[in-house]
Image 1 (cartoon, rainbow, N blue to C red):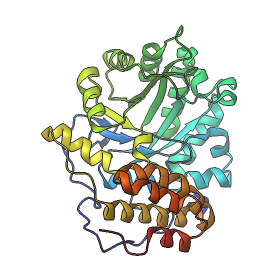
Image 2 (image 1 turned 60 degrees about the vertical axis):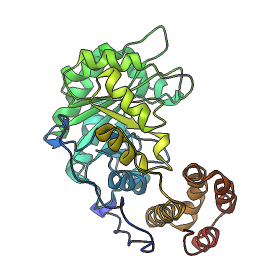
Image 3 (image 1 turned 90 degrees about the vertical axis):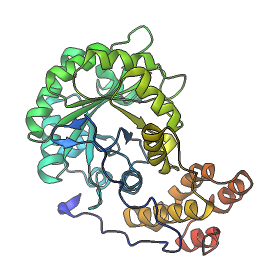
Image 4 (image 1 turned 180 degrees about the vertical axis):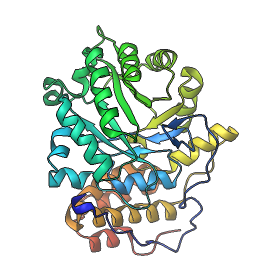
Length: 354
């Protein structure tokens, strides 16, 4: 954040619907922690490019996410205090536990980036990305490119741990470069040896990108290999998927990714399913519209009206999945071309339908 300023708090947008889920949920005891930070639930929001700015992170935490991370940024640009990078790293004062996620392979840049994240921007932990499959990142030997070099991972994690102290360092990784090079266990052990406080695994290879099927057997193998808390994920489309992964792999937490972008309720439902075996009823249309409206209002606070409304078009497709089938298409059609807040309000029909 430039000059140490944070985004202003966003006023409540829709007092006309019940707020039964909108305030932070009470903590539940878990054995997992990120360094000195206990984790109140077993479900977290995975960092995602273009989505996990503070509006989505704040909503996710209000609905029960244990923690979240920023979108990935390059350590080089953090070290340079690049204005656009600092904007991506903006946080809201109400966020509880969010890490700054960086990628890179240069020790000097990583160390300086960690010092900026913790010492200047006040992040409670630093997340080191070993998962990015983008070709230009991998070809630089960063992101998923580091999965072929466990010894370098250990060295870089040590550098980050020393620079970020006393804030802990976590690691996000993939299974390996490709199906013939599954190095997740070796890389996880190297990260732990370097001082990582938590390891998160997206069990796809770099070659798979975001396609194909996640291999949850790799989650179980990594959990068996390390002592620090471990987050699993991949193809988590429902609370049932997440609870099953916890049971079958033994991982400590589960990441929800794309499934949470238009469904912050998923964290509440997952916790209820884990605690009681049953999920609460889905939100009504009035609540979906109210949360969508609030999400857009926060995006306007963060991005400005024009960019926020462009982003709202994408969000509308995600949120439509929470609506009754006969209402979903109309919701998306009304919002897919909006350019101003007035058009968003008009598309939503003023007062939420009940």
